[in-house]
Length: 129
Image (cartoon, rainbow, N blue to C red):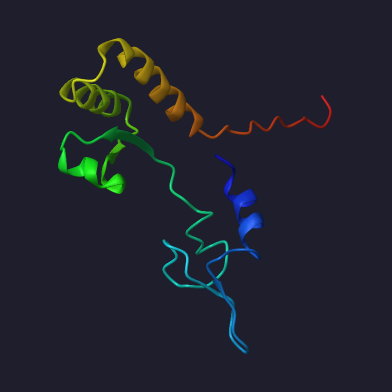
């Protein structure tokens, strides 16, 4: 996914949610924007929380008649032990293919690793010895 800054530069002037009026600040109707002001700080599109979501199909036949209701999204914890345990529990309880379990676990660890930010190491030079 693109960075929050890049998303904001794409969305700040051209968005279907922008509402402009005379003698008023530029407002927005974005989902997730609590104040309604069109700014980076309050943007619901640019400032999304980083989370891991598992999408599965529903077992209920009644949901198959509703296309929106077929897919279920489940948030997975980012903790090292709890996230893996939660993913295993969902995969085993849902009778998913057991041969894909290791693939799902490696993808989870890669996604979790991508959320980590690199720390800048500043090396100072000593003035004279």
